[in-house]
Length: 156
Image 1 (cartoon, one colour):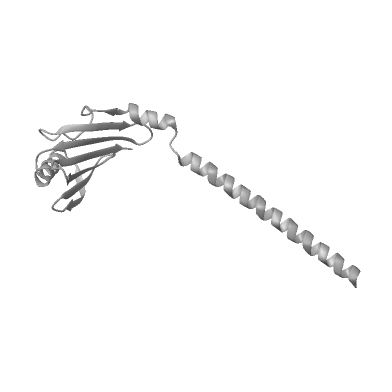
Image 2 (image 1 turned 180 degrees about the horizontal axis):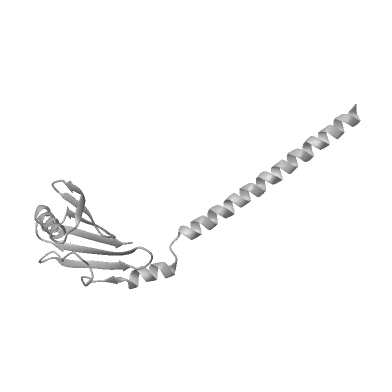
């Protein structure tokens, strides 16, 4: 009986050891996969450098919306690739409502279809489409006083 018990105990121990090793391998594989996924999602220095090089303080000539009159350009950025995009950040001394009305007229005057409008006292947004382009203009009051204007346009 002791012989059978020892054999059975050895078999159970071997099975548990094998199962433990299998789980350790799975955990190691999971940890390695997590590292690879994180590395793929972390911006590389090449991406950061590309983002920096594509920045400017000039209003892009190919942006289909006009610069708000009297506004100052904080930064503009072009993103090349499969889906090209332009982003421009402006500052104005005018009210959120006045800037909003200007861009509603600019979109309509250029044949854009306005999809969505958000109107609050200190924040307004317009989302529009034209052909293969999508755009939005976000206008918000800042704590320091001026109005911030963010223009984004992408083309597929």
